[in-house]
Structures are given as structure tokens and as C-alpha cells.
Image (cartoon, rainbow over all chains, first blue to last red; front, side, top):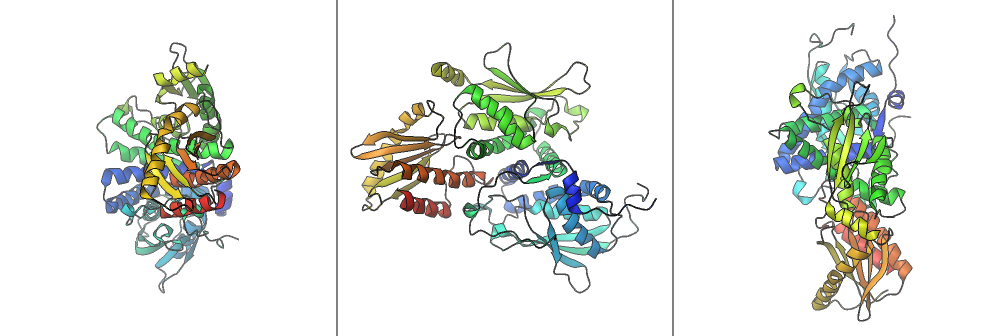
Length: 186
Length: 194
Length: 135
């Protein structure tokens, strides 16, 4: 049987079960708040959010591959596009764009066009070093690791810190094509 | 055309209009997030009851905000001053907005005057969490109990709110009951208001 | 423009979380203190009145010399209290409603602890602008 064509993020988002974004936003806010209380140091909160995102990413990739009908992306460029156009849409209902590719195609930026994590968030003076959305960088890192791409994901621009966009830089460190964690007949 | 939009930048969050609450994310995104909330909190506690308290606190933060937001958005700035009014607000309005449906039932406790129960066949947060056997009575509905408590307490109806599994005859899976036990002052005020 | 007005926000637990002296009269430290004292004294009246109506705007609930205390109670029992000499009830209602919307936005920030002091300078600026517009 020939593989089904990859589906667009919009089509997938329209077909999956959805919940009110406010429940999601406020729950995420409650998590960040708990971490700030428990860990005190903003730097530790950034790390924990990234870790939570990583845990999500390594589990979410299955659902992503299954629902999008994407046979594994081998090319980093194509993968980055899939994350931005399909991944963000099918899970968060928002799209993102890929830009700022470096010359050898191993580093790019993902710029969010909407961000349901940050509704009405304002960083108080005591949290100035906080990367409030750091869970997202962890998700991308975790998901890519499961398709054998070791990456480093960092925030380049953050509107909560006064920038004009949410921009994540994704840098491919190592690609290990022979270590597919999944069999092809799955 | 995908990818041409840009987030509108406001000088300050206070300039941004309050949304209508129509935006959605996928249920899986919420499920993943909620499961991280539970797992993180497991690392911070020694026992199930502490875990439930921490989930309740997280839910409370949501409930306190949801009360103010929904009364403003849906009720034309009316407040609930009566016990049945606030219960029905939780059972209908809050449930519908947060969980996409009105709760299955709202009942008065048969044995105690101060107890009410909101029941749900399959509570949203239970749908994607399977509880390991060694966690015994743990109920991640503690988060939802916290939301309910946050709404009630901030509206001036302090209560102890807990989540329980209740077996249903002929059904394999138990339903969830959110048990609400109002503080004495609430019932006294109710009696006074007549 | 009103000549005197003192606006405070009191949390559910009776703690003042925002204050502003607004109006064109000369601002005197002792007057500000007296105004806040009068408003706090009116809290007991609000406490009882709030349960007799489901409206948020309780209108004028108390007076002090030629000044009137108007109150607005939010769903979460945060109280907006205004001591004023203006008789423009519609303006006061609009002022409260717009401050309410600003307050909800402050509250929706997960990093703002409900019931804690509102320190946002943007909030302060906007409340003062609303006071100029409506009072």
C-alpha cells in the first residue's frame, strides 16, 4: 500500500479533540508559578521547564508521526518546516515560520505567530531572567531526539522580555540516521 | 496562506483586549501538560495526600481567575450571592468553558445539609492519566477539586472540596464525584438571606 | 472634573492593594490619610450590602461630610471604593467597569498572586486616565 499523503496541520487540528485554550494557559501558568515557589532560582525554573518539555517531546513524537502521516523526515530542513507548519498547528492550534537558515543548513529559527502560553503574562521584576515559555524549547529538543537529531534549542527573541517576536533557534548538533528508535512497519 | 500572520504587539498586556474564550488547543497538548504537572509534583511530596494538596493548589489558582473572568464575560457583571446560584454556575458555566460540557449532575448530599456533589462519568483529567496500583486512592481530580474550591472560596462560599471515585453499577469504570462541603458561615448566611 | 476623589482597591481579605488620590484639589498628605480612613470604615457596610444584591455596582453606600463613598464589588469580592464629591453616577459606574476590566487582566497573569499589591505602573497610569475621563 502506498503511504498516505502527509496531512496539513490545519486539517489535523480540525479533526482532533480540543480543549479551551484558557484552561491550558492557566494550567501552564499554575505550573510556572509552582516552580517559582519551589525552586526559587529563576535559572532552575528555566531548566525544569525545559526538562518538562523534553519529557513531553519524547512522547509527543509518536502522535505527531501517526497523525501527520509523515514518514520520518531525514532532512533537517524538511524537519524544521514540519515542526513549524504541522507540529505547532496540530498541538497548539498556531502556526510558526522557519527562517534565518545558516549557510550549511544546520541552524534555523522558528518564529511563532501566536503563543497560547502567554496570555496576559507579565514578568514581575523578580522574574526578569525567566524564559516563561521554556517548555517549548524542551518539546522540540525531545521530539527531535527521538528522530535521531540531537539539537540545541535556545530563545533568540521573547516578547515577555520586550522583544518583538517569539523566536527559537534550533541548531542541529548531530544526526544519527542509523539509530532509528522505531521500526518502519509500525 | 500559512505563515504570514504576526503576533500583534501591545505596549503592555493591559492594552490587549480580553478574549472571548474561543481559542482552543488540542486535548493532547493539555494532556501532556497535565501529566507533567502530576509527575513534577510527585517529585515534591512524600505521600498521596500531599500530592493531592499540591494539585489542588494548582487548580485553585485556575479557579480564582476563572470566576472573575467568566462572571465578567458571560453574566454581564452579575455576582452570585446564593448557594444554589454559585453551584449551578460551577456545574454549568465553569464546566462548559473549561471542559467543553456541562457536568453530568449536581446533587445535594442526602446525609449532610452542607454537602453537595458534582459528578462526572469521565472527568477530563482522568481520561489520559492511568494511576499506578501503588498510588492507591490517588485522584488527579484533586486539580479539578481545586478549581471548584478556587471559584467557590473567591465568590465568598468557602468549602472543603475533594475528588472521589464512585463505582457505578454495571459499569467497569467508576465515575468521579467532586464533593463540596461548605463552611458553616456559608449556611448561616444562606439561612439569614432566607 | 471632580475636585476630590480617593480611589482604593481592597482585596477579598480586606487588604488595600492599590490606592490613588485623583482629582484637581491640592493633594495634602493628611487629607489622603483621612480619605483612606473613611473608605476603610465603610468596608463593614459593604460586607453586608454585597450579599443583598447580585449587582457589582453598589452605588453610594456611605457619606462623609460632603463626600460620598461609592463601591463596586467584583465576582471575587475584590472591592473598588471611591470617595468623591461628584454626583455623576453614570461616570462613576463607567469608571468602575473599566477599572474592573483592567483588574481582570492583572489577575489573569499567573505570576500575579491574587490579593497582593498591584505594582504595575501601567495599571496606575490607566486608572488615573480613566479617573480624568469619567469622574
